[in-house]
Amino acid sequence: MRIALIPAICGLALSSPAFAQDTPPSENAIVVTAQRSGAPMWTIDTASGTVILVGELRAVPEATPWFPDRLEEATAEADRVILRARPKVSPGDVLRLIFRGGRFTKLPGKSVAGDYLDADQRARLAALEAQYDIDYDRRSFLMTGFDLLARRLDFDDDTLDDATEVVEKAAEDADVRIVRPERFRGEDLLDNLADAPAVSHIPCLEAAMSATEAGASIIRARGDAWRSFDIPAVMNNPLEIALGRCWPWADPELGEEIRQVWTGMIVDAARQNGVTVAVVPLRVLAEEGGVLDMLEGEGLPIGGPDWRGSPAS
Image (tube, rainbow, N blue to C red):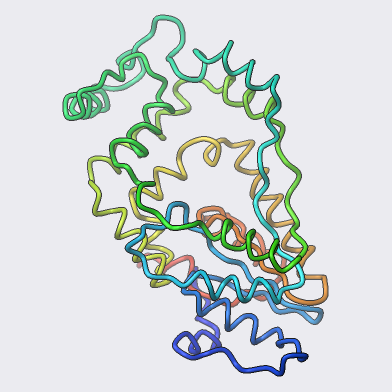
């Protein structure tokens, strides 16, 4: 992040301009309405139209004050929305998961955590096992990481609707066209996960342990940073780091494909007339070398919160 907030964001505390019933709102009015929701977002203004990039935070805490109804209002006036794809999972994929489940949930063969972790890593894991009275010794590092984040840290409890859910419902209600990337086949995702060596998930485990050790306060801090547009603070939060270091985001092939697909769709949308609302996971947008960096590399004018932070001195 480094570009200053666009002037329209000063309208956060103002009401939307009033329009006659038969007069469509201007592109700028739609942008201002979307920004009044309180979600961090960026705009790309071109000769043909405007793209609004909403930085989605997974599992927004109930304690985080934002106004999804204003994002709904803006969505209803948009020409199109771009939302994340849903995995294409077939009954055959479910059977594959059942018969190959051990490859996803357990370490290979008869190996145990100590066969892969160094002494410090294993000691940290042992401390968490004792704290939560659970045995992770044979469990895969990815499943252990997910368990620590979702069940021990409990980061996705007491949350609000994600921006994708808000925009999807509003678009369906207003008959606004929804565009999605081509879906990944469930078979491909399962094969990718099954073929990943156990050691490739150690960074996920380490980050999940750090987040869990830090405690529940990081959940609120992450939500507060998101709401105050402090994007570097979100990206440096132990919970966000953990989510970004776990599969599929951290997988070199899948992660790069996800970034390329999002960038291509947004570049295409910038060439179209009217307003596009795109809801993109914040970690995909704001990470180093992520979608915002790639869009800037394409020469597109990006307005919105600083996503890089101040350079190190």
